[in-house]
Image 1 (tube, helix red, strand yellow):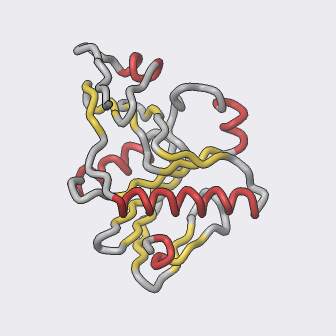
Image 2: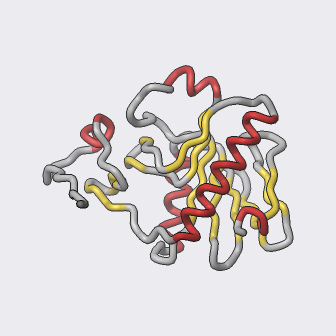
Image 3: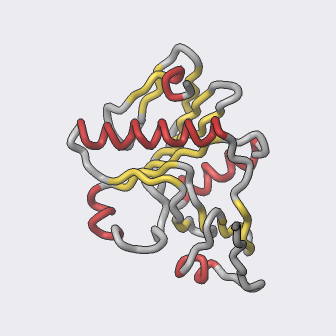
Length: 179
């Protein structure tokens, strides 16, 4: 049996910060359901989470990797598909229900229902809220775009994508990530 959460009509960003409903983001003053996730989307999300987590352990950098976990940007309540939190921020915020800022490193896996402009606006929103690096993963076109405050790099089939500012030294073949 599937039950739907009943959410009050006047649900504020502060309400989201206290008790974020599952699979929902708080965008432009209202709750929006995250939708459009496909099997491929879930597989890539799992792959990237696994690769980042494995790297944090093997490199000794530590920190934590999350999937679909809520955070607050300057104006919205978001749930990045994959997010990394440094050891320092884990020590500071490790037990909160919602991270009160952007994660330093986030990835959004673009779903078939996502609009291109919306995805880039979301990346800008993360960066404007303290995020250092955003990965935009396009499963169908097989592109990974890595965006920082100072650059945007595009990687595609037969190339190796790497972090630019967070998790120094991490890289993975695009073909392996999108397999």
